[in-house]
Image 1 (cartoon, helix red, strand yellow):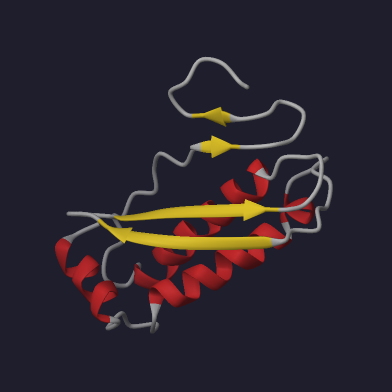
Image 2: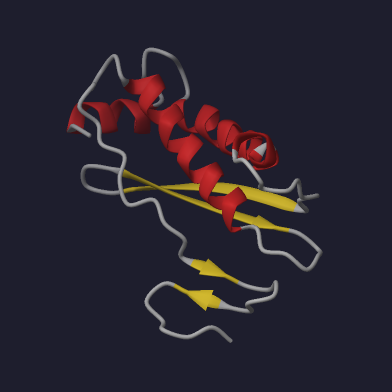
Length: 126
């Protein structure tokens, strides 16, 4: 995104209001509704969902974490939370910068479930 858009979001001066607070709520809501959005994804009783933001030179990094007590992973919930938070940032700031790019949404780490622990950049699961 351009510098002016990033500055407006950081200062809380975007035309539609507090971009990051709204994006956080959107991400959490999306994680809770993942089974309604993705075919064949079963509903999960999530214990917690967090959506965090970090400012970079020309971007905002969004990181979502989801957890539950159970035998299944919550990768889809975290990816859905991240994706919808990013789309919300775009929607709330598009009046300032229609050329924003959403990119590199991916899983960074997964723990638990049948396949155990997985981290981006590692070749094996354990």
